[in-house]
Length: 204
Image (cartoon, rainbow, N blue to C red; front, side, top):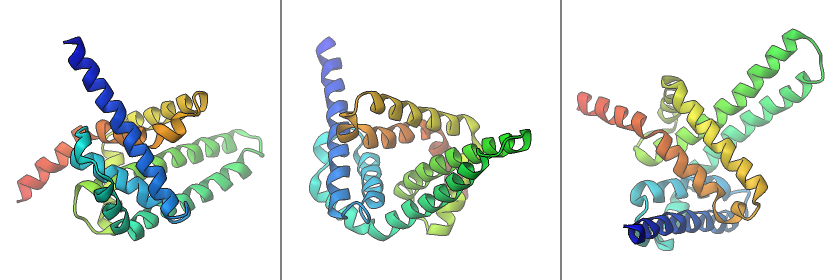
């Protein structure tokens, strides 16, 4: 019993490490600038297809997915990046002004940044899970984030804790951080994706 539990634990750790190394490899293949977005999307797709079946997660399949995700992955990544840059700059200006009104504005901007990051995670997951055009993908991601505040909170807190642990143990940045974020987002939104599947079956 203990041996089986340890085997399962080691398999999960290996999948996390393997996917994170794939992320860095593919990001470097895109010279980081054009690689991070497609690499994140590729890691998502590989985990959604195979979960913890580590033997099925191959470099060949990952490379094929990375090439297919080049345009879409960068559109999603830089889209949210520009939005975060705008919100971050406005937050930078707002925190320099004192007053209750600007404190409220600060809170709204911080929430907007967190919401944007969670919505980005939803777009990666939903785009890997369903065949959907870009506009409807964004609409579905927005609906998904608004459908359950608890799911939004779970993703935000989970990602925050992962970065906090990474800040303390810097080695995780290379071996675990990004794959853990994708796996946690997948796990946290499982119930919502099941709800979408049920509704799609109702329309079929």
